[in-house]
Image (cartoon, rainbow, N blue to C red):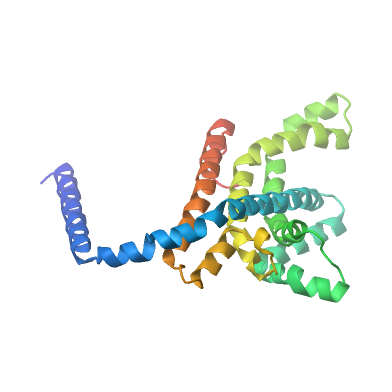
Length: 262
């Protein structure tokens, strides 16, 4: 038997096995129970009114955290590339620390430890969440930006300097704009990760109007009309937000020529 025939036979056997497993699964599944558990109309009706507000809060918290992470990450990236050793040590220590600890610990720190230790009160829950998630995200964004800055061809820098531009002007007008073009896809991916990390803020004392999607789903589990239907509904809303962002990431990869993770 030729290699081509063996490959065709192998594929047919695999298809047959998959079809058999699918038939067995369809026959063995208790579809009535599945319907009551995952597609309960009462559970869906109970959670639907809270989903739009929770989805908006999730997006707002994500943008707040990304704004903090991007601003702080740019500073850290420049410090990592600085010729001043102290700056490099501080930036490296920050990045390694926040990349090495769970984000949930940082969330709890901003929720309880920091307000108690420093007598700080956050008047805005959006600011509190943005800082908690942003300081962690900054560590990852800094490395992405650093790689993007280093990926800018040195010829661009030399050309700018030959035109009489100072080091600072070259960095601001030549290097950083090109670096951002390079790192747009991974930065978009970071937004997706932050969107999912907003589920960690359940530890904050949130008012009902401040609930994000996961908090709504968790509360629904303890309600009489709760259950897996509520979690499924929350998961669908997450997908409705993240799938377009993932599509944007793929489009940016094609248009910017970015390949893989920076």
